[in-house]
Image (cartoon, rainbow, N blue to C red; front, side, top):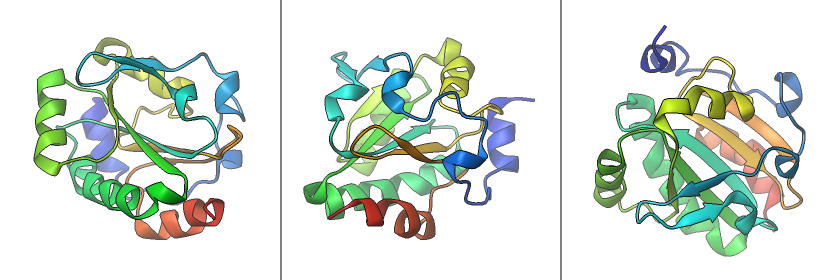
Length: 167
């Protein structure tokens, strides 16, 4: 089944605590380092944001639920960035399309370009075995993966999972 089709089927996924998934690791820093280029080609390591609450979101321009979710992620970055939240988008798509979305939505967080040809392996490494987009991982300040979710990450999930991690 195509990745985009699975994202539509599972777009209304329920909240799933990290402990309930078949997770490859309990701590983000135990996984192989995530090093990806941004839209300008500059490489970043996920560990660069160690010490912050990281909301790592995998998305693509062709994913309808992703396009609905991105403005919320932008809003949360604006409202909670000064309290230690760092949203990081990993776009699994053509770089020009990612740049167009980032520019159009004025995304205030880093957008990294994920490897389209090996996207499924990257998603599995982070616990998304079915390869559903959008896919969100919340990482606390120490690197503990506290939450994973296939499907849109909404205000209810943000209030329950992320806000308690922020001062």
